[in-house]
Length: 340
Image 1: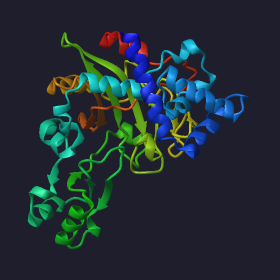
Image 2 (image 1 turned 90 degrees about the vertical axis):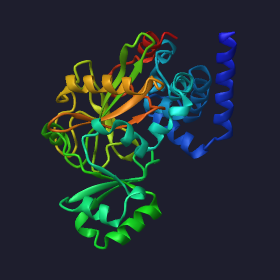
Image 3 (image 1 turned 30 degrees about the horizontal axis):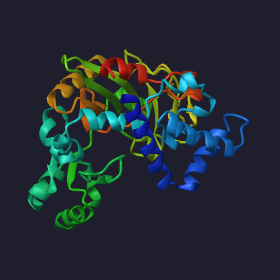
Image 4 (image 1 turned 180 degrees about the horizontal axis):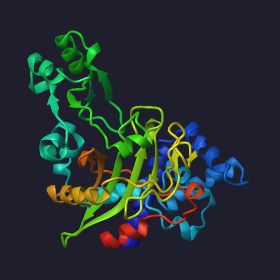
């Protein structure tokens, strides 16, 4: 029965992919993957469709993890976004998801671990906003429901002018969460000072109350104020001690042994205060027991690690074979922890 359900799930996923088919985007991923081998683009596109059924990959997954150059037994080791989504739906309680979908709810629930002051524009007046801005050079405004770095703006307080008009602007654009700018640890700033370089740590709290770290990722900005992969940033995987395993890569698959702007070596880079990071995510994972499978975004300040946000449908991060030389994914680690 389980095999039948898996087949049905994969077939349903494939049908959804076909009905939402974006030919140009698919061909973009196919051309990118074709550069790794001598196979023609049409053959790569056909292989992408096969992998969507056989391994539940998205076309983005196929390109990001170089499925074109992997053997079948290697492809089977990769966690994919659809697999992760199924796990999230099965393990996490729908009724609690608002805590993670809404940044204001998250701030209320995890306020003591945020490490920064914040203000809800909808619940305060012009005077409170003016008091929050006073003495600060910059603030960040966020859309509480934004994802992937969208709906986030860095603001120079000196340019605000009329606070009442600024408040009306925030209400109009939906960027109603105002936060002070985190000061990141000097070692993280040395890597790239233009953004807060964060970690994504994916945890699973099992029925025996053990918190497993399934993946640990270092995300680094590259020319922008946001480190997100979809906004020009790059990432590399970390080992159990918080050291970068290999070069970082961006959304186009470009490898970066050193940061192109600062020249700091990425391969072997040691994240500061990493034992404290592990202690933090262990505490966070126990805070909402109804949501055992979460991806935490963590920043490192000079004093301690703090949480930025939690993601109940966390993206999947794994080593890119053409960059790292690693041709094995994290699915076995997920299976061992989650016992599926």
